Amino acid sequence: MSDKSTSKPQYELNRRRLLKLAGATAAVGGLGLSAGLASAAEGTMRSRDNADGVLDIAIIGAGLAGLTAARDLQASGCDSFVVLEARDRVGGRTLNHDLGSGYISEVGGQWIGPGQTAVADLARELEVGTFPTYYEGKTVFLSGEKGRLALDLQGGFGTNEEIAAKLSQLSREVPSGAPWKSPRAAELDKLSAGDWLSQQNIKPEDRRGWDVSFALTCGITPSKMGLLHFLSMINSADCQYSRLESIKDSAQGTRLVGGSQILSIRMAEQLGDKVRLSCPVRSVSGWNTDVVALHTDQGTIRARRVIMAVHPALCNQIQFTPALPTGRAALQRAWPAHSPARKTAMVYKRPFWRDKGLNGHTHQIDVNGAVLWAWDNSPPGAEIGVINAFITNAQLPSGHQDAMKILSEIYARALGDEALNPVAYYDHDWGLADSWSLTCISAIPPGFWTTHGESLRPPCGNLFWSGTETADIWAGYMDGAVRSGRQSALQALNSLRQV
Image (cartoon, rainbow, N blue to C red):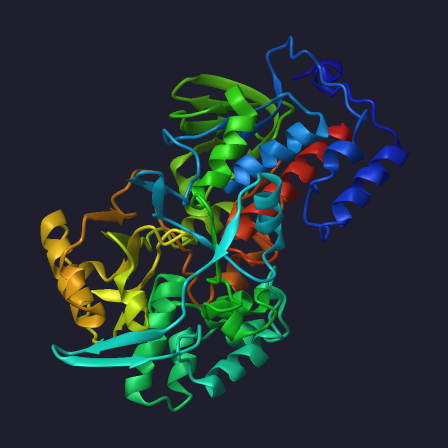
């Protein structure tokens, strides 16, 4: 807009109050607006009536990042915003499947762990309880048609401790928020994690375990995962590989009562009609001007600032006018766009395996095995038994009945014949879910960060990048999504105040 007076937000905010707001932010590690933001900023804002039809802030994406950003805007006193979501639901890559009788099974991301304080704080604020992932008893390893071994791993995955210690040590040199700034970035980013593992003289039978571990954590084989990126993930976990990969006291250690999607559902309920579903943004124009136009299936939205809380590769489905800066556009084009996961849930009348001293965790260590990892995903009271699993898609038919039969037989070998009689089965392939779920996990290849890292976070005009991939720590996790939402809300608000 040419008339600057109509584009300037009418907030009452003096320097002292801005410093007070910044202090509240610092209380949560300088990563965004704290839970106490509303009280810290009380009385500091007065929004316009938006008579000109222009919002202060538009948020694209109603996953954890976008909804957290919106929640923080609301807490700050800003009510001139909207959240636009392409899907007909909120939650992004978190999704609950209703098992009936009040029970659910998580279809997407589901765990939190030590150090993931942002998502843990959000759960407390939303009055969502937590409970430990069940791991007591023996884990079963299946090999071939008859091979079966049950071991008590005490909440771990049986990882080679010497190799894990080497990775932990290396991760100290790779900052999680900016791996490209590591003093060894050029050297480490030339290697895949598979290249590095090949240099460690690992026995062939042990290498299969590492391959499975990478598939679970990264959604890809070690040969396609950049070593620099993997080390940055370990760095997020306090430079402890076991805290990243295990169950006990790790990133897989805790579940949310009501399933992970409940966080987004409750935030959306609080936001009310600020959230618009089935409203994909097709194009963005004027991002370098005072007012940005978002062209959606429900009409055009005009806003002074835009928070892009979407996966970097998904940005390629949006047309930007003018074209984005070269570096940012190149990052989006190069970002891995297809590493979907397939997750299944087998439901039983009760978790019968616990009576046998088994924890429900099963690994098929064969290259052609269908089950990468199965685990006890029963509700906190164990009123019913649920076995969830990450599946090797090529090894399991897509047909519902055929897949259920094969998995039932695998579980029977591992857990007992009772597994042949499930009461329900659910199968979710993220690669087929919708047009907005390109991938569950970002498997960053070698060479990516040293080429594109500097373009990850800097705003482009009035566009602010959010989403778990942009987080300083725990990028790729629910915690990273929450942190990124808080950070982008703060960036957008501060930008408006500087006008």
